[in-house]
Image (cartoon, rainbow, N blue to C red; front, side, top):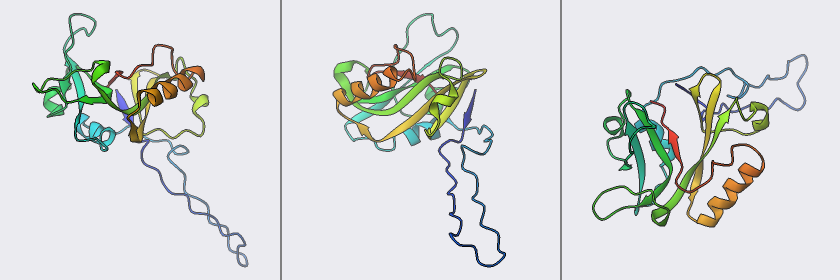
Length: 195
């Protein structure tokens, strides 16, 4: 699995309007979208710090980790703490796109009634089910290759959405535009971590 440094944007200097004499116009530097970016390694902690930088005090992000076949047995939501210990690199590791009300007993709960804020919109299956051409002009915060040629493309919402109605409207618009499958809605959406 690799992550591309999509959140790095190289500013494009503008060329002078009227070059003086024989001087050549300044050629703008390429943006990340024009340059062929190599994947970079990023820890799960650093990744989540970017997504949850605007975290209201009463809310907690949630992670999940499971070794072996992720389709067998149960999964437990954990309040984000020492993520690199909670989500070791030899396990299947996920984060929730939302943060939730902190539970009195310190446990994590991704139930809808505990929804607090929606921090990241993620488009799944870009490259296989969703053509990359459909994202022209869209600058994602990150891109994770989850299998050969198949990507999760995400954008951090700043500020995060606190209104359930706004989250629903955003997700419905993305699904109506066929930028993700119809199962990609919901305020409690689990997505893969980079490591």
